Image (cartoon, rainbow, N blue to C red; front, top):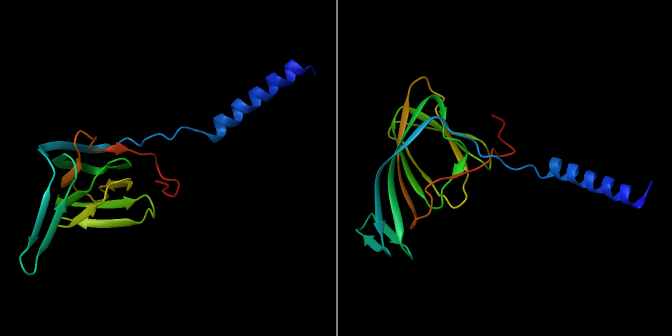
Length: 162
């Protein structure tokens, strides 16, 4: 075998190896999930400190912020697709029930009407599903840096097989 032919075989083998090892991670599409932006407010630096006895609040940002209020409608069997947010979200289930899955454990956490939870954002990958027999809705208040995307799609985690 000539030196040139060996080189071509090695190059072809390398291309095949890369194709099998370095597959691109594809985002998961939402289905039966519609997010509607209700409001967007823009704020400069926030320095809020409140102490009224039994209630303490501290909100301290550096740089400009966008604050969104978003209504998410989730059809029966619908899901959000795996995603994260650059900042935290305060979520309230307003209609029906949802199940939240965290990419770290893939363990389900159920939330019904009136339940609340916090998505910390900052790379926390998650998915919301409607596994009930009725429609569901959530309202999210999201804090992100000025002009950052509200949502960042993510691939299916290796430990979640649904």
